[in-house]
Structure formats: C-alpha cells, structure tokens
Length: 128
Image (cartoon, rainbow, N blue to C red; front, side):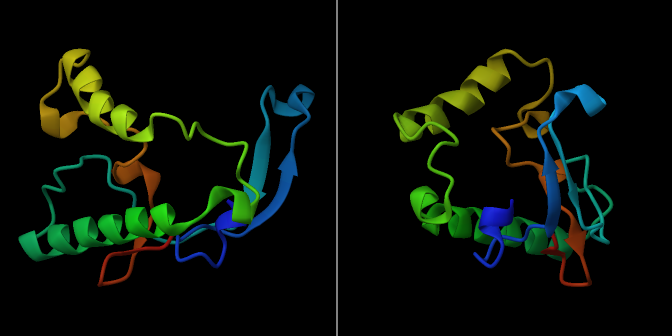
C-alpha cells in the first residue's frame, strides 16, 4: 500500500510491516485508521440512486487510476501475475458465478467489491 501513496489511489498511510509470523501467525502491517463507511451489500440498498451512482463512479475512477500505475515503477513488479490478464478478467466472473449459490449481484469479482474500500464524506469518495 505504501507504494501506491500519492498515486491517485486512496490508501491509508502504512507505519510498519511485520513479517515475523511467530507474533500473530501471519504477516501484518500497522496503518492509519481511516474514518468512513464500508458497504457489505454491493446493491447499496439504503442509498439513493444518486449516492449509488457516486460510489460506482468513484470505484471506476479508482480502477482506472490503478491501471495507470506501472508496477515496476513503484516497486510492485513481484506482485500479481501480468500474463493472461485480460483472459483472467473475462473468466473470473463466470467462474465465481458458476461456483456461487448467490445471485450475480452478490458475487465477488476479484477484489473489486464494496468491502475493499472505505467511503467518506457526502460525495462518497473512497478514503482508502
């Protein structure tokens, strides 16, 4: 996350990374607390159409900003798999849907869903 700071992608400030799994049983990091809301239902049923639209517009802005980043330029070249990216994006929703008992609206596509972000303010911009 530290590599994405200042990139146009909302991320909290990271203070420390601990890779000693003997402490908590897993690698962990300490980051700033970010005030805001996390949406667990992707349909956003308690929001008005205008509020839902603002959130989905901001999610699209975030994804566009992520795709503008050169992973090697920010030190993230060893994360993820660059090969067959487009085919994985096409295959994943269908795989998730066929393995799910939920409706298509309830399935999770990769990491792009409401619990991946914290939304803040009246304009529903992603805070982290």
